[in-house]
Image (tube, rainbow, N blue to C red; front, side, top):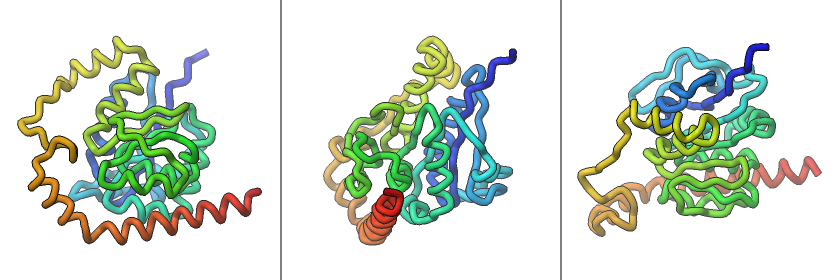
Length: 235
């Protein structure tokens, strides 16, 4: 009998942060005995920050997977209001061995009702929204709670992928892939988190993002209300 490959599904959407997707994709695509599928609500081409990812499958056509991964994006809370997309994410996640996300993708998992009572990571600027879905905020770069594994902001997706690879394929395989991709980060600045960034840089970034705060929070609250109503109806 032929061994079935480990099935990985990336659930992507227009406007996502492409590195949330392409970072872990690059690593997962090199995992032995695996099959990586990229899917979206409508299938076909998916635009993202000037890049278009072509030929994605329709999420509704995928029957099952071993791991589902949802990337984040500037419009993650808008996507969290897409009931069809959220429904397919939930359907696949409930049967998957691993339920995962990168950056604000955890807000989408939350809106799908997959994080209640679970510790989860998110981009530092938006992690305060996680409790709306019953999740427990964890400031870790890669956070695991049961079969839920979430990565922090954007570049944490690579560390997240290596963490998952080590569990599924073994540490030797994960380290071999890391070596082949020469992942040895040595950033020229220590400004990658609010704790290490210069105060002037942090203030400027917060000012830049201020206009999005009320919009994102309103969308997140609407998604949380929908989730609560859906849960009540299911009882």
